[in-house]
Image (cartoon, rainbow, N blue to C red; front, side, top):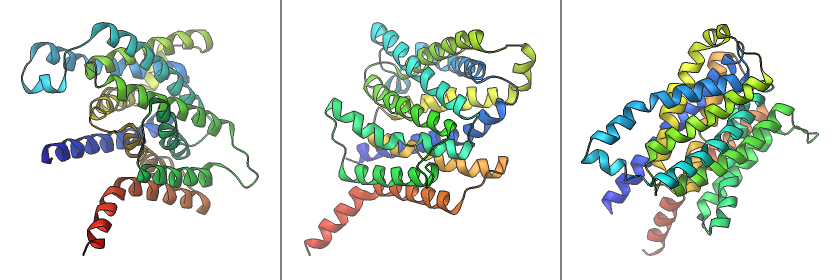
Length: 308
């Protein structure tokens, strides 16, 4: 029992760190496109993420014991096809998000992307997954917050916001596929294959639709390094590892905290601001996330109180 609680706490902490990294990455992604196109930027950052995993790949081949508990024996065919599938989903989601950032703010993009907190449990029903009441209530509150943030009184949504919304469906699918694969294959190698796949697809698209020059990559070097090594190489890998012990809908709620971090750092670094309506939406979303995490504890406390 204590071991299971320890695993859950470790997974929650890893997912929270992932959310914080992704939140700050929205700022770097937006700044990076001052010098380079969205597809070339994604190709470069996912290539950097792939290189960042090489030391871990070498460790996983040469060490035993505790490392082996983290890195299970690989299933090569499943890993290859699973990595290709994850990489393709990642490419579509990252492309929609990156292009959308041209037309919207980093903070707003973070919250709209967080809509996957409700999409994940809905899609999970097709896999016969049954999220608890706390997850549903938290996701509904978060969705209401996203509505206040991104939909105007005339029920219109900007082009950039729409692209972010479409990317949310990709992130939801990615969460569910990773949840299934991470229990069956080596998570580090799975992350590596999906990063390489996403990078290649992004570069191929960039060659067809964007102008490429070495100077552009030099000007965007710092955002590429940060989003590649930290956001891709570290955060996406933490997601794969953490989801081995976390329910997909539970993981989605925690990771959606990236929206809060995106808004905070967008304000601190890019002078982005929210209206009172937007702030209300942010508050609703945060309440939903907290409710989803505290629901079980509140239920147990209520049960104990009723038995006195």
